[in-house]
Every structure is written in C-alpha cells, then in structure tokens.
Image (tube, rainbow, N blue to C red; front, side, top):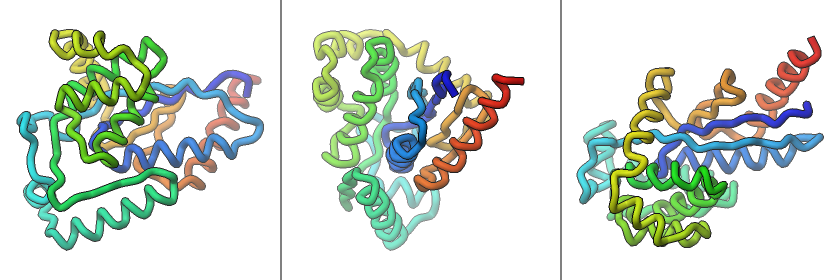
Length: 221
C-alpha cells in the first residue's frame, strides 16, 4: 500500500484509555512490515463538557456517574496503571485526583494542528494530567504543556485570552457526535473503518493488516 493511512483519533485528554489506545496503536504500527506512513490527527471530544472550572473530586465524580465505590476505583486505577506501564506510559493516580473541563485544551490542540505539533502537544497534555497530576483547565499548566511540545507560549496565551477556536472545536465535537461517536478513544481510519477503545497491541495489528489488505485490493480493482 503506497498511500498513507489517514487516522483520526477522537479523544479527550482526561481519558486514560485514550493514551493507552494511542500507545497500543504506535506499537502496532511499528510492527507492520513494510512500514506504513500515517497521517494522524486528533479530534476533540469532551467527556465532561459541563464540568465547572474548579473541577470535581474523581471519587465523587465516578460515584455520581457510574455508582463506583472507592474500592472499584482502586481496582480500576491499578489495572489502568499496569496497562500504561506495559506500554511505556506512567499513570500517577491519587486519592485526591480531580476531573476538569478540557475545552481550552482542545482549543490549543486545534491550533497546534496547523503547526504540525499536535501529537506532541496531546502527549504533553496526557503527561500533564495523568503523570504530573496537573489541571488541563489551568492556564499556567496548559502553557507548560505548550512549552514542552515546543510551541510558542505567547501565541498560546493569546489564544486562551481570546475567543479563537471556540467555534471550530464546537463544530468538530458536534460532527463526531452526529456520526455516532459516543465513547473515546475512537480511531477512524481512512474515513470508513473504526476501532474503539484502548485495545491491545495485537488487536490493532490484526485490524490494521485487514484494513491495509482491503485498501490495497480496492486500489487495484
């Protein structure tokens, strides 16, 4: 297959399965032979669009949303931490952890797309929230992630102080909701194939091979 795979990842920076899924995808792509070039773009999805600026206790939030107990949370976070470690990502969950609004993070991600540094910023934001315990709605924390990704901090601050990219993020969010995307991560490949969730590496490998085979056959028929 000579043409690159187009992969759009619908994702939120406060979703642990999104970074697990990305790490699995990256490892799967490294196992494909011959190597496949990928045109990868991150698309916005807010798990908690109505979250107030101060956020909410993670324990309280998961109990309200899913009925989870502290014991359930401990079991889940251990499983996620183990999955992350196996894939090379560090989760540092805390009993004092909080859930935050992520809209401003998505505005910066949309801006960084045109600068070809979107994945770098996305990974910096995952690190900010899950590894450092930072707040992806705090201006200083966001600007720290921007700097880590090698993006111009002054430009990012100007964006956060303005209305820029608000309309565009809302439009993209609405587009994927209208397409039936209701959970993240959702990997949309060549605008027609979907892989959902933080799948194991082998699952990505097998699915990508099938997609590449189908796409190759479609090019010669």
